[in-house]
Length: 141
Image (cartoon, rainbow, N blue to C red; front, side, top):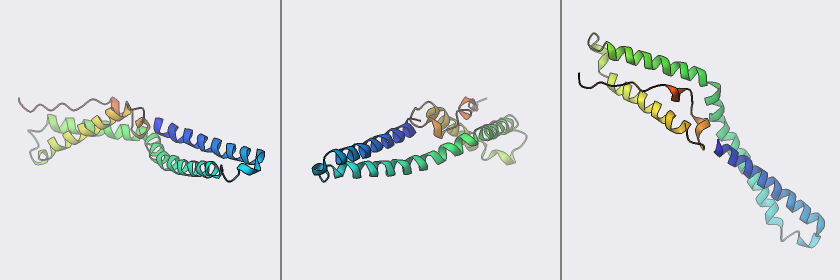
């Protein structure tokens, strides 16, 4: 969230730089060439940050639009993995990759849980998925 706010603030700073350049040029014609860098810097700052804001907003929109669907998918994946773990003795064929799939699922959960609390990157991760509990692996029985 703070990343997108930072881009917005830099756009406002660029607008202020362009406006201040225009005010200086209108009030003192002889300072036009000395303050030209302020105007160009403001335009570059605006254009660069609008582009960055656009490209960083795309993954945020994708994450937020499909938030509930991805949450339901993660819940279903957890249920399937827990079912396979409970019935691992009955189905010996599908158990080769079970522990690696559970580890992968838990690592993805850990990533969501970590970054959902980060003020800079929390909009890029699904906070609903972060509410899901880890799958407990019982290696010794």
